[in-house]
Length: 123
Image 1: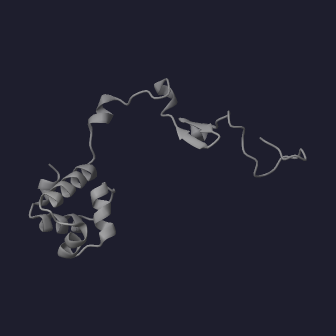
Image 2: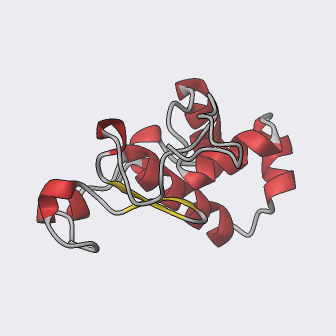
C-alpha cells in the first residue's frame, strides 16, 4: 500500500498501480483508472472472443435495430412517435438502444404504433 509522506499507512491508501487483487481478475490498473483487458485465461491483451459469443445478438438488440429501422422507414420522428403510442421519449430511447428489461407492454405499444406484430420486431 502507498503511504502518505509521514510514513504511516492510511486506511484509504491505494494499492500500487502494478498489483492486482483477485477480485479484479481480468482487469489491469492504469494511472487513469481501470481498463478491462478480458479474461486472464484467454492469453494476450486483445484476444478475440469465441465465435459463438460474437455471432449471438440479444433479443433487445434485435428489437432496437428493427424499431429504429421501421420508424425511420415510415419517416416518423421520435417525439411524434412517442405521442402516437403514449410512451415517454426516454422510454423510446431505451428501446432503440437495446436496454434490457423493457416492459412487454411497451414493446406491444411500439409494435402497434409501427403497424407490425411483436414477433416481427424479433426477426
